[in-house]
Length: 111
Image 1 (tube, rainbow, N blue to C red):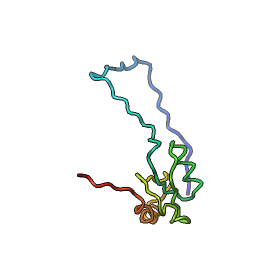
Image 2 (cartoon, rainbow, N blue to C red):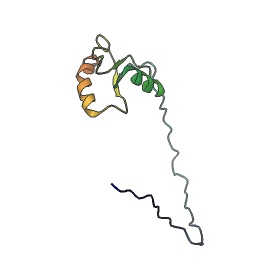
Image 3 (cartoon, one colour):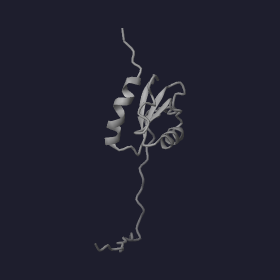
Image 4 (spheres, rainbow, N blue to C red):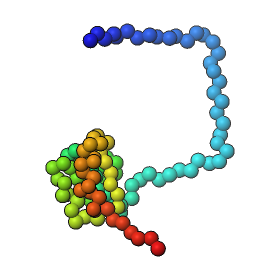
């Protein structure tokens, strides 16, 4: 397979710079707090325990369990509010881990 390392360059001609038309928003922009709730119990699905804990902590989350293909019973007996996947987790592996995590999800009845 042949590859080319040539790059096409387009140089702008000397002319007036385009004017940017910036307008202030009519309503103030609402700011959202994106910090994770420290009281939320999250089970993390990952390829390895170390990678799962590292990625979760980088997101500001302290997971209650990390389920991997080698530790399918990591969440047994634990109640959790949510599941999160590793960003590198393959969809096939997620489908394999999900049945082991779902029994731990806490549910509530609404009146």
